[in-house]
Length: 191
Image (tube, rainbow, N blue to C red; front, side, top):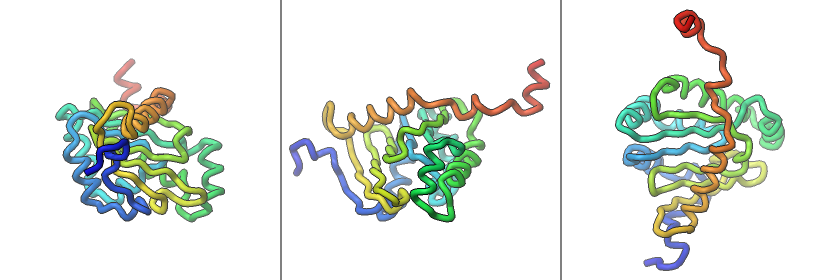
């Protein structure tokens, strides 16, 4: 049994893609208070978890706060990352997949989305007292980078430090939906 500062590390995967889908599904379904998806694109979530939008809507209706922090598809940071990765499924396309998917939950109280460019090199996914953290390695896409599964056991441990990081990024983010123009039906009814 671990007793040192590494006790918060439950598992380490050499690749994010090596983490079983069941881990993700269990973390998503068991979270009661807070879920944070702070991956630069988050697009893999929609591909690997059928009906995720419905699951998140139900969780939000039960009081779970859900946050998406994603990269801006039109930013210079995104453009530079596309040059580094040099893959057909570009970073901006992957972000737009997420933007399209979260549109389904746009008006659900408790679900928020922000743009941020500062988390391009690390993804943090929080599910109450558990977390999946992916430090992105040079020239690799997220699924080819390593991932740690953490559980909070102490103050100021790894979990709290990565949690603080995600909170800071969130506080500096820009509301995804505030930047979009209103739909015609909304404009007509507000006049």
